[in-house]
Image (spheres, rainbow, N blue to C red):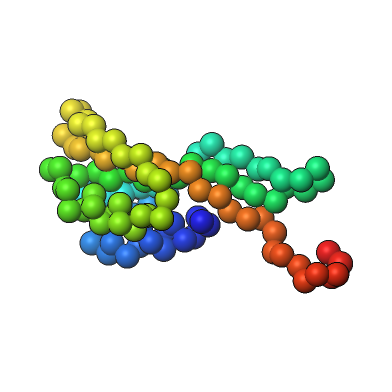
Amino acid sequence: MRIDDIVSRLSTITDVPLAYFKFPIATQPPFMVYLIKNEKLSGSDDKNLIRQYTCRIELYTANKDFDLQEKIEKLFDDVEIDVDTVWIDEEKLYLTAFEFITFDKLFKPTEVGEEE
């Protein structure tokens, strides 16, 4: 799954603002941020062919929102997701984090017999 696929899926939840890593100004909940971590490139002896990374989506809400959590889970029902919720006392917010590992191919398959 490519990063733009992740953003496209999250953007379908139109009533919740979305940003990469952080918002430039304070934002009222609910809101979401996403980030990419633990990126790893691998492949054959002479060329990286696959990018593996962990995507983390953070949902911040004033009240525990099970419906919104379920919407996000359904958007990514094709990957194995770890979900964890914590209370941030200083902010008076719930943080529900969704993490999953995904892969992205770095090459386009060529026709048989075609030179690269």
